[in-house]
Image 1: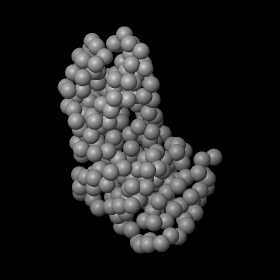
Image 2: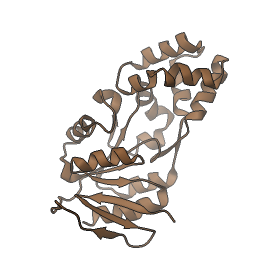
Image 3: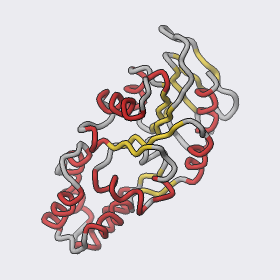
Image 4: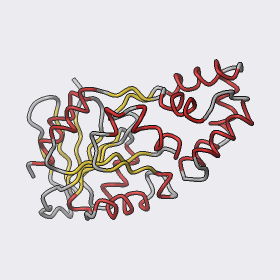
Amino acid sequence: MREITVTIGGRQACGRGGPLRVEAGCGYRQRMQPKVIFFDLGGVVCRFLPQRRLAALAEACGVSVEQVESELYASGLIEEWDRGLGSSAEIHHAVRERLGYPGNLPALRKVWCRAFEPDPQVLDQVDGVRPLRTALLTDNDHLLLDALPEELPQVASRFDALLFSCRFGATKPSAAVFNQALDAMGSVADEAVFIDDKPANVAAAQELGISAILFSGAAGLGPALDTVLSQ
């Protein structure tokens, strides 16, 4: 059974499926009642399966998966696009130029979304935290941002806001991402909860005073949220 770890204002709560224990730490103070919950996309709300995107692009372009990975990922282009250095049209143009992609922009949006498989159990948890406000907070590009409402409506429609790194000019774990996300939701750190599958991102949120949950599976998310929301 997986262990659940939650950071709440300088304390950690840990457990293995039962009630979570809370360990006191330095600097703890009473928190405000949470008003907004930020969910990561790939690895939390959706299973992240990049090989599906790579394979679809390779097949469409008549090249190897290794060439796709080299041209888009190893080259640093994906990281640049995640920081907003490329519109959807510019990403489409680059994929055509580098790989000979034959499809139009709508077709490429479909391919881009192949990397994400929605997790119904997590989506149920998103619904379950209402009436709190919710937002996706993800490191992704304009192409995915434009594609999500049409290609994965069961994901996009669940959230009050789609907050993408491409609009912030930075990626997690940069403090700039979290600060801009809080501003976008009209909240302060004490009113926010952040869920991510990367320890570095969780630690960065906690440094800013945001309650943070390190996601390790849908089964543990409910108890972790209950712990945070009951403080």
